[in-house]
Image (cartoon, rainbow, N blue to C red; front, side, top):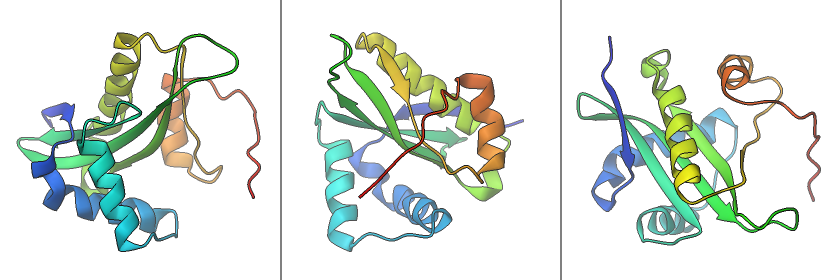
Length: 146
């Protein structure tokens, strides 16, 4: 049984974070320029109050990542937390890391008095959706983009 521990993403985690970030982008069949990756990591580890990153570890090995954006809302006085990215290494799926990361995001949101935590996933992401359905409610909204 895995011993999953969640903690804040740190600058020293970059070498472990990079392959998970790349795996996340590959999963969603996308890519970003190297400078976006560098900026993202710097924001997540640089003390920006509008973003935070977490890692899940199993016996010292980083096996999952979560990135969140904190923002104001026109619907509430309290901030909202958007779980922007969540990824667990394929060989660590089923370890509880995904659940632990989401619960850690909830804890951080509660600590800051956030009024909502929310995220998006692709409708075909059935494996993740089974987990998400145990942790949150799908409110039926459809995303539109430009």
